[in-house]
Amino acid sequence: MEPKIMILMGSASDFIIAEKSIDILETMEIPYDLHVASAHRTHQKVKQIVTESTKNGVEVFLGIAGLSAHLPGIIAANTHKPVVGVPVDVKLNGLDALFATSQMPQGAPVATVGIDRGENGAILAAQIIGIHDDEVRENLSHMRKEFFFKVDKDEKKLESRLTGKYYVKNTFPEISPNIFKDNKSPEDQPDIAIIAGSYSDIKIAEKTTGLLDKLNISYDLKILSPIRDPVVFEDYMGQMDDAKIFIAISGLSAHVTGSVVAYTEKPVIGVPCSIRLDGLDALLSMVNMPPGVPVATMGIDEGGNAALLAAEMLAINNEKLQKNLLDLKEKHEHN
Image (cartoon, rainbow, N blue to C red; front, side, top):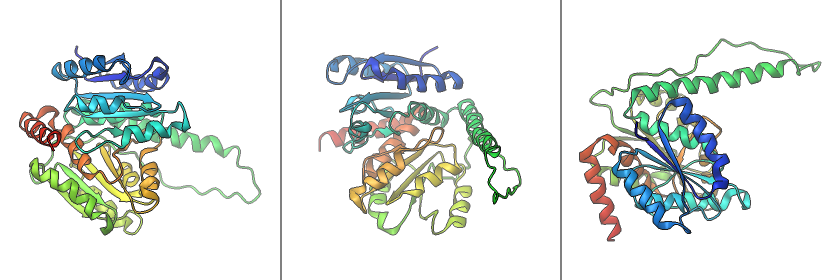
């Protein structure tokens, strides 16, 4: 049995976060390996592990690091496989690590999850593998149900504490969580569904679609807000149910990514846009998702990296796309 996921930690002190990832992968029955390797102190070790693991069939890398947190970026520099980054809170509430992990230059995307969210890093890695593996997707669906039922149990626990004179309990019909569906997409279904929250986001979306066109990856693009058009948004998510990956592009409070995640168990890539506050509001809204619902967050305005990350995900079992991706990355390196 060969590992499908390689976990690299910048320091042994990051193991407390890695344990969250390990628990998920053990539950999901996904083989993994784990090593401690510093991007700065053991650079050659990182490069050796990444290059050899890429050759030996590792499908996703998980980089866990705090402080300057260059480890996920160095991993991305040495592989064409998807890299998930988990920033760790060592100083500055983890913001230093978050910015170092997410704000990658074009050509080396890192799918960043929330600070200390080792569990979401592992879930995102499993979602990526699940694009090509129905058994993993089914296990993910079961896990999603467990998160659904946990919220329901938590609500019931509160009922005994609600003793106010004016508390009036309403009951609502039972709602079932999403269920696993066969991952065989119809021929006319695009591989990727792209949702921009506003016409002001279209320039960033064009960076995404431009690279997808170069890589001959099919996609659908809609400008749609879950806040202004919730019914239309829900209908569209139903229409795109067989898309393999979703890319959500938005600024401000960036509700688009959270709404997409609510409707799908597929990987969701988020691109924050710099409309206000230099895009920090959108970045923080996208990346700091609760357990069970990760968003693979890109750097601010990095629509091109969203396309490259999606291509890395799709190329895991597609040799032709893998070659196109490597050729495109090589062009980036020489520009």
